[in-house]
Image (cartoon, rainbow, N blue to C red; front, side, top):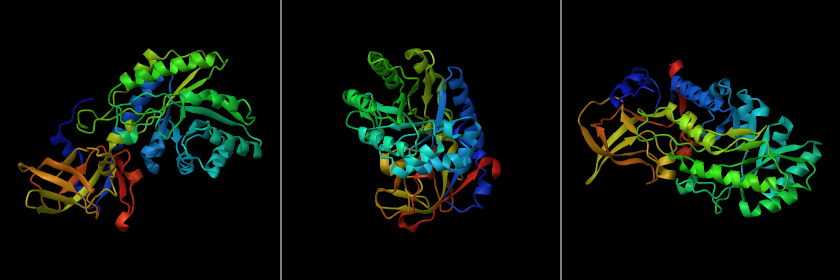
Length: 392
C-alpha cells in the first residue's frame, strides 16, 4: 500500500463540499473500505478460512451492504444486529450470534431464521435455548465460547479471554458443561468459539491462543468429541497513531500465524470475526471549530463534536489522530475538546495542530469502528449524518 502523507491526505477530503454539510458528520472512504475487504478476503481465502464481520463495530446500513457484497458472513451480539444483518442481505446461514446475555426473543429470532450458530456462554443459557428450541421442534446449533485464559495485553475494558471476564466458559467448567450438553435433546454442538480481546497490535497472543486450543481439542478427543468448527473470533488492531502509513491492517501476517500454529483437521472449518480491522480506517468524524479558548495555562480547541459522536477517548482513553483540514499555519499546542457538559469530553490533550481558528474543519481519523454505532443523544443532541466518498 502506497504511503499517503498527512499533508496530501487533506487533498482527498472534499473540504469544499464539507463546508456545505452540517457538522459533525461521519465520512466514509468507500474505496478504502473495498480495498480492505478485498485484502482480508483474499488472505483468508488462501487458507480456506471463513469471515463473519462483527456488526457491533459499525452497523451503518450502507457499510453493511458493502461488506455483505464482498462475501462476508455476520457476527452479531444482539437480536437487533441480526435484524440489521438480514436487512442488509446477509444470508442467515452465515450469521453467528454471540453475547453473554441473550434474551428469549433474540434466541427465538435466531431459531426462526435458522442462523448458522449460537455462540453459547453458560449452562443456564444452554438450558434456556434447549427449552425454546424444543417449543419450536427445532435444534439449535451451538459453539461453546471458551475462556482460554490468554492475556491479550490490551486495555482492561476490551480484554475478554481471562477467567475474571464475564464472557465465556472457563476451562475448569468445561467438563460440567459437556455433561449437561449430553442431556439436552434440542442442542447440537458443532464447534468452539474464542475471542481474547480487541485492538491487539502484537500477534503473540494469537499464537498462544492456537497452542491453548490445540491442547483443548486433544483433551476433547479423549471424550470422542471432534468438532467441525473452530471460531477464533477477532481482535486484530489498527494503527490509530498513523493511519496514513497503515490504512489496511496486515491480514497476511494475522492469518498466517493461525495457519502456521493451528493444523486444521480433516473436515474442520476455521472462522474469524473481524470488525475494527475492516472498518476502522475507512471512517473519519468531521467536526467544525466552534471556539478557540485561551485559558491561563491552556489553549482549547472547542469542537461541535463531542463524546456523543466519538466516545472512545472518554471511555477507553483512546487516541485518534486529529487533523486540521483548513489551516497551514505554524503549529501550536492545544487541548481538543467537545461541547458536552462533562469534563471527560476531551479528545486529546497537549497536541500539536496548525494554528486553528473558528469555523475550520477538523478530522478525527480512524473513526470507522465504534464511533457512529456508539453515538448517543446525551444533552439532547441530534445523531449525526453519515456521508460516503462515492456519493458526494
